[in-house]
Length: 293
Image 1: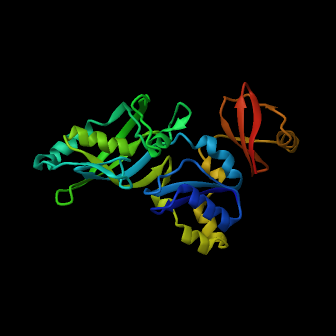
Image 2: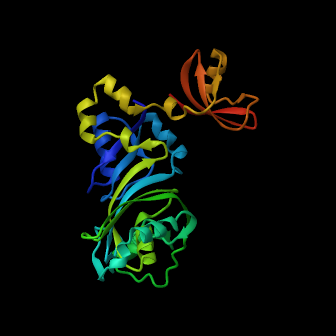
Image 3: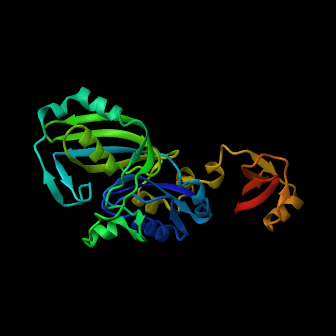
């Protein structure tokens, strides 16, 4: 089985847990295109079989999230799993919807963002969370800002009683939603942490396409269900141009020989007698084998 399945990751399990379970269910090699925090839920694309070779084409995708912010409290991890390190009263005017809308609107566009201390970014050979977990001082450690972009941000709900704000955000790869929550709170003259996070979309993969581990286990031998829920490598590259090879060209292609093709440098779907063979790339008018089924 070669393709991509979109798992709706449940809360309180790691992305590696999901990979392990799917590998056990299908008996295939399984990989992912990027992890989700244990407390986060939602879209987790998993690559199965030879589709694991497609990971290099899927790592720079934009993301969409539904986020719940808890106002009036700050945690050491900037999310609900951390220890509360500060509390303060949330002023009444902060819940003014127009003020919140204007604040969120101000975050649209290209900007720099300081990653949270509890992150996997490496500084001086160590991941930031390793410094934090060991209680080591990070005062002399420079955490460099990252370039990110917020494409859209939409207010979904304001709950004055629970002191929570819910919003949806579409952003570039590398955006830390925990940091975004803290930055929004700062603009609103309060403090906050990310209470809940659901990933709604990764690139073209959406929550509507997702399935659960339980459904995969139940239907793993059902061809119709598998065909409906597994995105093939051919489908993944549906927008790419095609190249049709003769039998002789196919033999050379499969054996790693570069073939002359007067075409633009790009990724191409390769066929032989209308059968999908795999993916090839062209550079300097030479077609090179990349992924072969």
